[in-house]
Image (cartoon, rainbow, N blue to C red):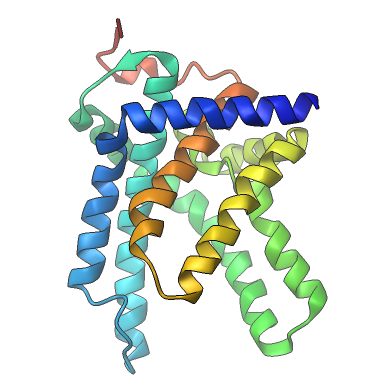
Length: 225
């Protein structure tokens, strides 16, 4: 019951932040989706190299957009106001840390995914599914917790374990919706609505589970009225 109450509080707080800051939160994802459409990422192609290069470029832009959503959510959660330009500059300065941490985390997952596709082992499927649970809070840990690549991974792992029920809900509940939409080839709601909403929820949960002072010195902040 205790965990359930906290999960409801997390969702309520996330909905409020998402509603109040809707345009700021989705703007980077609108740019991301427009870029992906322009690059023809959702169109079938027989040239896998082109698909891979396009996916890599979009992945980098998507990581940047995710970082912006996390910082915007932290600002709203903490009662701070700062310009979008300040947010983007901070995310850009932190991008090498974001990229290196993501690479460290995603390479083992891709290896497991490759093995699963070749061997179809149930054990590999379980590992593949459980793996993201431990890195749900990686981006907030790096940007809000101001951790380095390895310490950010460690904190995400510890936060996930110490808040296992809340993390499981935050991690897997949106996955079912995303998988369902992908199965019927509907992508725009995932990019424009679900992705930023999920990042808001993850950030709120992280901030309620950790000391969330954040990088206030990097912003010309003022208390919102």
